[in-house]
Length: 136
Image (cartoon, rainbow, N blue to C red; front, side):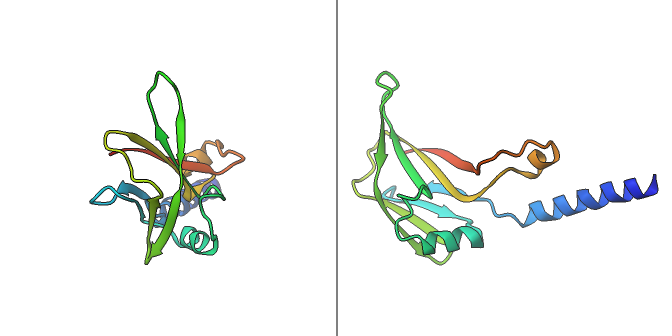
């Protein structure tokens, strides 16, 4: 009985310590809303972004312009990325339109699941993308 209790406490401590080390990815427009900024990147994501010459074609970052709900159309936004320190910047080829919404999907700081998912055995087979809708 004592060994089971010790094992459970040890597992809880390991998961709580490991969850504190993960960075929280922040996805926001720059102050002038001409670019999208990704901050709080972990070391693995920074390495992947630096090593890939075209991060957009490899699915690292996807930006989609959400148009009217009536038409249901989505427009993929192309652009270029730049890394300065631990900040990744996405600059579109054409400027963002005022009043439009943009869906940002990224594999940066992504994992197969959070600690809660692991404890519930709800870990998927693919990496879960992080998503955020930004409105200009």
